[in-house]
Length: 160
Image (cartoon, rainbow, N blue to C red; front, side, top):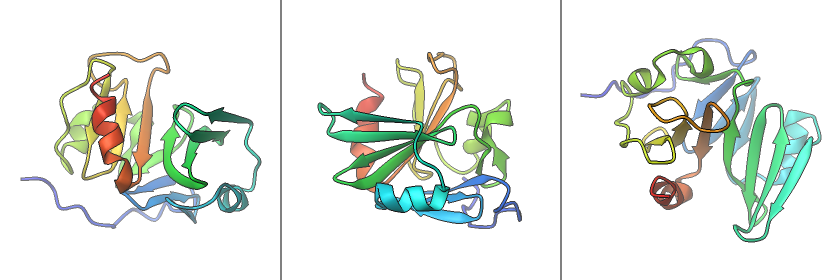
């Protein structure tokens, strides 16, 4: 039986980036929600992106800022990827400081088997984690949080 998922998070809202599954993130005390525009995200983070990628094949725009990659489709944020230099917390787990992340996340959600690409998905948490299992990835470790409408994409992503 899985641990009940609730919204009880330590009072670290203003010190960290906290995942809110399928809704978005709490960015140092400010909510960034899936479906927001680039302009709205920019207002909340208070900074311009350091890099912008336009992917015409995937029909995505990716903005790099604060150690994160915000992805937009149809002018709405649909996922955010966290790199090693972010202070991401999922419930009480300090993601990039945790030595047994898959085991800890498994207390809240059943993981998929690791894909050949080195990623494992947790669909109740709305995340895909790379580099935490047996296979390594070029970026070392990544966590992507996604909107519910992206589940099929992340299911396919494990197969490539």
